[in-house]
Length: 88
Image 1 (tube, rainbow, N blue to C red):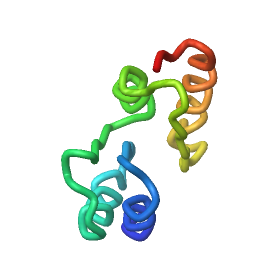
Image 2 (cartoon, helix red, strand yellow; image 1 turned 180 degrees about the vertical axis):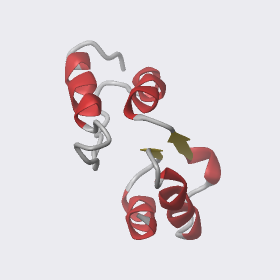
Image 3 (cartoon, rainbow, N blue to C red; image 1 turned 30 degrees about the vertical axis):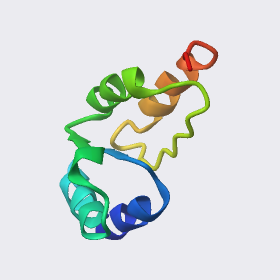
Image 4 (cartoon, rainbow, N blue to C red; image 1 turned 90 degrees about the vertical axis):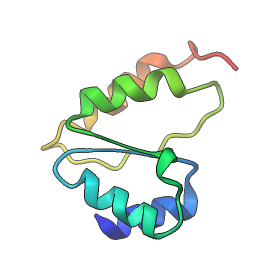
């Protein structure tokens, strides 16, 4: 999870992480140079999606790396429901 955070820092503008190891992923991103204000952690997928929705604009790319055990598919379903409804 720490390595995933480091890789996110190298490739992404921000990191939204949820679940038991979200803090470890956030630490990895911080260690790799991502500013802490671009990292958010959440207890579950639903809270993560609720925080992510209002920050998205048309044209954004979202990489979802999650497990079925943590209901990661809820993120994908929620993002798909937004298709065509985001503003620039």
